[in-house]
Image (cartoon, rainbow, N blue to C red):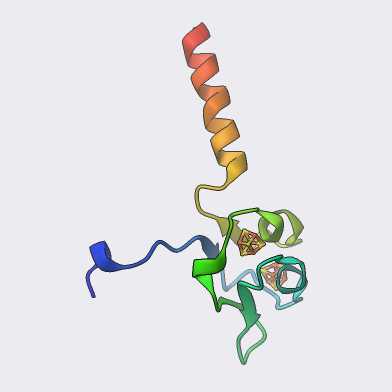
Length: 86
Ligand code: SF4
Ligand code: SF4
C-alpha cells in the first residue's frame, strides 16, 4: 500500500513516553484505543475517532497527540487573526 492509499491516522502515540496507565483508553468516548500486550496504547478503531482530544488532554505524560484536532484549529484561527491585524 502506498502512502496515498493509507487512511489518515487521527492520533499519534509516542510509544517511548507511554507508560500504559490506561487513562486515555478509559476516557475515549468512542473506544478507539486499546492496550497492546505490553500495556501501551494502540489504535484499535481509528476510523471511529471523532478528534475530541480527550486522550491528549488527559494523558499525564504528553504521549498521545490528535492530528489536526480542534484546539489546533482554534490556534490556527488566532494566528490568522493576529496576521490580519499586523
Ligand atoms: S494516558 Fe498517556 S501514558 Fe497513559 S496509556 Fe494513554 S498515552 Fe499512555
Ligand atoms: S480524540 Fe477522542 S475519539 Fe479520538 S482517540 Fe482521542 S479520545 Fe478517542
